[in-house]
Length: 352
Length: 110
Image (cartoon, rainbow over all chains, first blue to last red; front, side, top):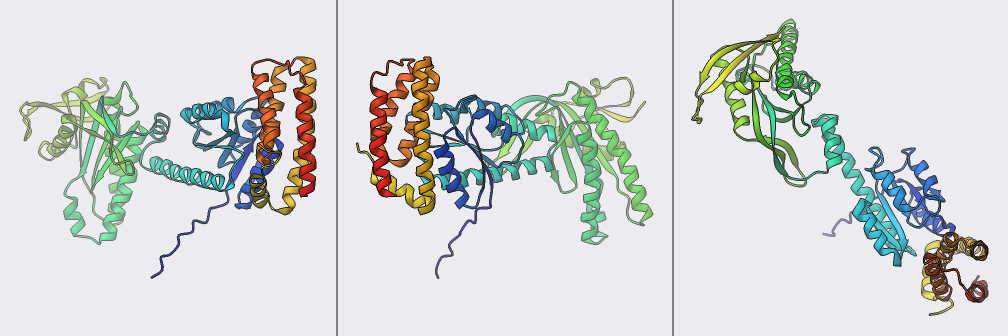
């Protein structure tokens, strides 16, 4: 069998060539145009930056030595611009400016090419950079799907790295009561639809209050408040989200019953304290997650809602973070399985 | 070192295509004349920055075409400009001569 050659038909991209030298502009435009890309040029850094800021480009080839505004200054301006920093910049320079080029790459330029530019290298570097940008754009979209815009931006600003850090935050764990029984008694597609509608409502309550959903397991949700972006009032935010979830659930159930479908009940457990938060997984697939006793306890307390017959329970430290407007009921202390110490449990029943 | 490194020039011609290399040569010759004038004016005005930039441009273009002699001379001038030294002596005339030799060579290749 002959191996199938995987030809990567490079999508036409919109490229900006910034170079004060006419011959360089001509050569670069010609070569890139032959690749099917749409090329525009600028004669100096200032003009280049102005064109780049229109947001119509997928990549910029940037000369270093230029009048009015040099390549360094353009690069720095782009890296400091939230809208531009994700667009790749390839530095082009003479061989003896290699020191300068290294500095640019350290600053955040995607790659570099030495002039005179070799057409084969040019094609390879441009296409590789465009491909990397495409992947980054996809990541960005993914982040936005699963995290709030703030987290996505924080991630893109701070960069992504695996590994955790100790934070003080609040964790919210929720679960649908006896979902398995519900699922067994109806069509699988109905169950999925139910879950999707339910999740979309719950996610709204969480993200509105600055939380991030970091795990969905079956019908359960784990969300964190106060990390990676710290909020002073992380405890109150989580409780507010929990109460909103219960309010939204009422609406959800009314709809269900109107359609002669099953109503559902949920349990929510909220705990606060120190935990390790960070990205776990691999470079290619990772989630923002929290680990530690505080997180385990949230799940235990969530389970305890069945016995306590209250849908929203919090631990003592979370309770301390609530203003007087919240109606709280002291349920005494509970020793949870696998824990040595008794934990004070409180039911939050509403907000004045 | 040579007036024109043919392997560089042919590679450029091949990647540019027969029509476009003509356009490119014209642009190169014209631009180099302009840059040399800029350099002369810069010496008169004691403007090291313009001097350096023009020399840089000549060098860069020369390298693109494989005009090694011209590039080497322009590089020296660029360095001088960078060091704010515009005591060019007869170097600008030497540059001009190298350019004329190159122009003849390129015209032969047209």
